[in-house]
Image (cartoon, rainbow, N blue to C red):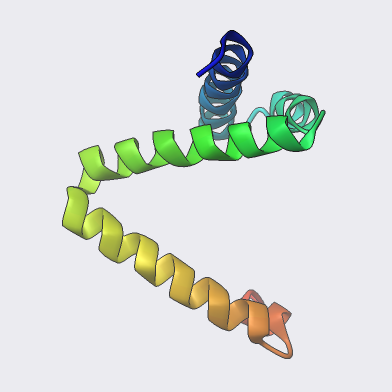
Length: 96
């Protein structure tokens, strides 16, 4: 890995950790800044998403254990796939 790639990865990890922290604190302005900043290039976006997934995977495994985390992620993927193909996705979110 080159110096440039290491710097990109470090910046992505920093952005991902900040994004998760701000998500937990509901700081929408800061989250918007981080997402905008991460969108500066395709490489920056990919690095951010990769770092975010890495952190999320570690947190999920620590919180639930590996098997339960994988089961949860499979459930999320399956339900999201069903929602993305739904003719009227909004009905799944209506309160009432």
